[in-house]
Image (cartoon, rainbow, N blue to C red):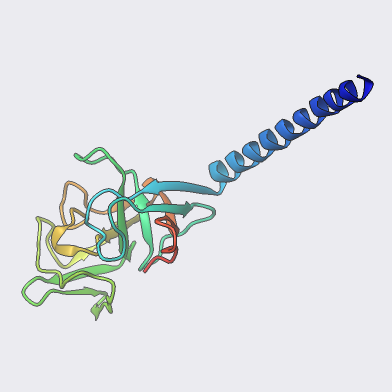
Length: 181
């Protein structure tokens, strides 16, 4: 009988130790993901073939300065009223020019090497080109240029960098496809 009580009494402290470890781990994970990383899901086809609808991305926003080629998540208010996932094409002060007849994008007079796009850029919206990116902003487009609502449309336009919540670091889901681009 004493042996049974001894087993029961040692079980309770072990259980509380286990719960304490789990709670501490969850708090640490919460702090890391609140301060250093965020998670965002991809909705739609505007980033095909690089990203697919249903993919989940881990974003970093620690001391982030946007640069050309980055994939970012944007919360700038739009008619869609949901975060946008796009690629930075140009940063403040750069000039974007798009030849929609030939599907070619130029930044500061240089044709971009874009092996990640689904097809050449034939679809235009209402932004006039050449276009100089405003101070504190970036110009973004989806990789699926002919099926992407992006900075080419004045309802989105240049993206204020304060609305970029992070740069995509890697794909969390689906498993086995962690690398982006």
